[in-house]
Length: 258
Image 1: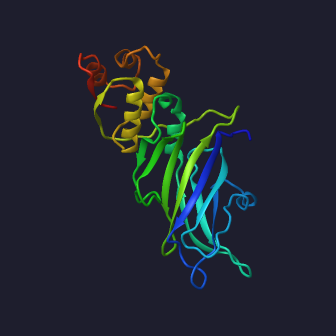
Image 2: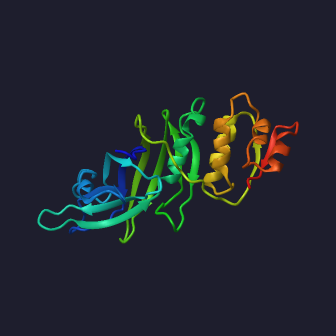
């Protein structure tokens, strides 16, 4: 595939309090696809059917090819019927852009991170289908994102999933656009670049910094021996106050992103 960025493995874990579509229960399964997928491919990306359950545990892996990081993923739950069309049991749409931004900088956080370290947090909003705070976590040498999705256009139901990125040799490099945020990140202890990178990730996820990804680009390109102070002098995204505070003798600075 010419524009392939990589593969997204979606581990569909379970459903919670799904809608009843039969007499007293349902026979649910999940279909996942991106907005650009053609109809013929949709049928291949589905879980197995769980009989007579509104709290099913699928634990199935569905793998999507990704060509556009800004393209949302759609998840739909159906009730399997033998003699009529399968009934919809709700749907949810979610963005993978923030997760793929984290994956892009994965080499900068590898090594020294303990299993279960939370890299970013994404809050539920009216613009997403999250039913609770979503975490991007360092898990057994991989960055994964855990989500609880609240199903839409249905009386009740949630689905728990986990995202995992799979690199494909020879695929195109990421081409993300920087996100814009408008707050400030305070009092970061500069023990190492890895510490700062994790702090910036946290601030980005909480919408507490502006041009955070630009600074990550800076840290990625700077040699490991180069200090933040020296790196800032060569970066057009860093404010004068950041460079000035980084030059102070103490180890704490307040980061202001323009």
